[in-house]
Amino acid sequence: MTRIASFTLTNSTDIPSADPVICGVPLPQGKVTEGAKIKLVAGNSKALSAQAEVTARWADGSAKWAMVTVPKLSLKPNQKSKIDLITGRPSGKKSISIRRHAKGLSVNTGKLRFTISNKGCLVPRFDVCVKGGWQQRGVELDLAMTVECSGVYVVNIKH
Image (cartoon, rainbow, N blue to C red):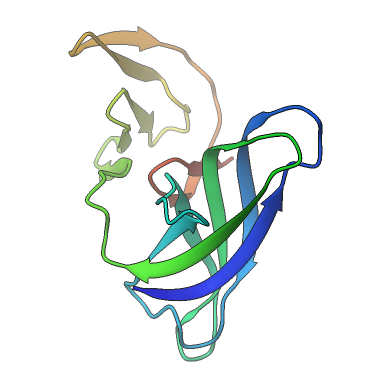
């Protein structure tokens, strides 16, 4: 594993925080090549549940910027936490599944699955996993959309 960048997060308040963190991180040219996985590690060498999406590339094709999402980062009052971005092998954690088919787009997070119709209705039908079984729910919205990016924690849908 290779460290490619570092940054420090600070809780400058007098109360504990357990908030999501989303930030852009610049990456050195040539360090993160096509297909490489980016992981985040806290200062105590603890791997963080996180997602890093490459948002720009250098002329050589390596990653230039990454949008980093940490769904929950707990910090005590006035605590600082150094975060390292490292390259490594995939964690094996299953990401959100997105499948295109004749009727539209199907998304499965493991706890929620839904289909987006080609006709422009966003989430016309969705299923929720309850006690290991899928239960159908429904909602109708008339919006056109495009999936811009997807990962373990985030799916950006533009309409």
